[in-house]
Length: 210
Image (cartoon, rainbow, N blue to C red):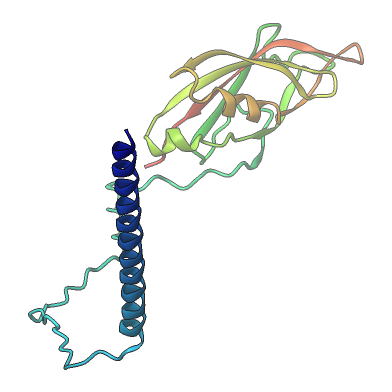
């Protein structure tokens, strides 16, 4: 029994000595590596250093013209825009003639029309404004007409204009109504009293000159 204990103590002692020896050599080796690395970082490189630069073949520089190209000219330029102008109307005229692209034709009233037989006087157009030709329709070469019905008031202005017919539909309606609201009339007078005239109609034709 005692011999076994002695052998165990001897083995532990030998193992402890070997472990300490191994640890010592490992620490010594690490210290040597660290010292050698510091010297390598501080020492200047020895020998000649050659830099190799690969030269490319001469390249031809191609310049690209990035200037914007002009758009092609239209085959038929659109006619100039029509500016609204006031036009004095001859009371004895049967129709209104105009040099603009929108033609204002004579008014037709459902309650008497242009009758001039009345002693007091029927309503008569005084000022009519040519409508502005819609730009989209003008650029596309669209033509047509609009019949507008409205009320001529006691003071000669236009009230409640509505479109009763338009060819083509929904193209010239807004321009025709806007122009109609600027019309001026001599009001109808009966027994010395001005009165409204309902159901007055006016046809506005949109044509492109030339």
